[in-house]
Image 1 (cartoon, rainbow, N blue to C red):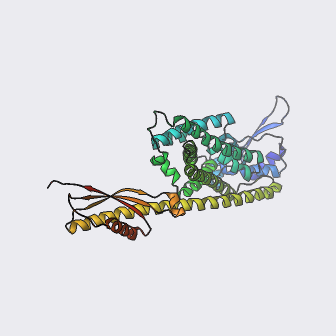
Image 2 (cartoon, rainbow, N blue to C red):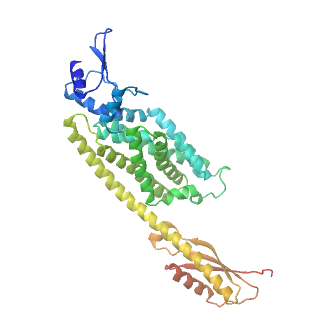
Length: 418
C-alpha cells in the first residue's frame, strides 16, 4: 500500500484509504478519483513503483465529480483517450460469447438475405443493427497492440468463421427459396438492384471499409457512437457475404467472385485501419520488454493486410473499369440512336430508332466478346429501306462507342395519328 500512496502523492492526486478487516488477504482499499486521460499514466506510475501484479486494480466510471480540485486536475491532464487497460476490457466486452455471436450473425444474415431478395434497403439496414461484427474486428486489433495473443486470435477466428457461416446461411436460404412460389419463375438474382450493387463494386467501397475501421477505433477509445459504428461495419460485411451465398445457391460463380472480393477487402481494410490507428494513438503493452515483440507482430500483420488489400483492390479496380465500360457502351448506343432519330425526322423520314437491349456483360470486357445491340426501328407502312440499312446502323453505333458491335435491327411498321 505504501507504494501506491507514494506514487499517488508524487502524481498530485487525491485518494482515500479504507482498511481491510475481512479475510486479511489485502491490506487496504485505496480509492483515487482521476479523469479518464490520467488513468493510464497513473497505472504506469504504480507499476514503475513496484506494485504487486497480484493486487486488484479496478477502474470504474463516475457519473459526476463535483470538486474544484478535480476540475484543476482535469485542466492539468489533457487528452480524450481511455487507458490501455480500459481499452482491452472494452474490447473483451464487445466480443460476445460464441453462442450469442453466431446466433445473432445467423439471424442478421437471414434478415439481410430476405432484404436482398426483396430489394429492400430498409430491411437490410435493420438486419445490420443486430449483427455482432464490431467486437471481433476490434478484439483482433486491440489484442495485437496490447500483446494479448489470446484476444487477437479470438477476434481473427470469430471474423473468419463468422464470414463462412454468413455465406453458408445465405446459400442455404437461397437454395430453399429457389423455385418456390415466394420467388417468380425464372428469377435472376443479378437483376435485383440491391444485389447488383454488391456484384458491381468499385473502389469507393474501400473508403467505406477504411472509414468504418477508423470510426470503430474512435468510438472504442472515446466511448461514443459504438452502435452506429457497429451498423456501418455490418453493412460493409454482411450484405456482400449474403450476396456471395446467394451466388452459390443460384450457381453463379461471377456473383460469388465479385461479392466475395468485396467482403474480403472490406474485412481486411477494417482490420488494417483499426490496427494502424490504435498503434498511432500510442497504445502499447505495459511491459517495455513486450513492446518490441508487439511491434514485430503488428508490422507483419500490417504488411500482410496491405498486400492482400492491394491485390483485392486491383480486382475491384478491374470490376470498376469493366462496369464503367459496359455502362459507357450502353449510354453511347442510346445517345446515338436518339441522334439518328432526330436526323431522320429532320430529313422528312419518320424513322424512330429505339434500343431494345445491349448484351454486354462485365466478363465480356476482358474476354474481348463483341457487345450485341438489338435496335427497334419504327417505319411508316410501305417505306423502303436500303439493303445495307443494318450495316449503316452498325457503323454509326461503332463510331459512337469506339468498339466493334454485333447489331440486330428489328423493323416494325407503325402509324401515328395526326
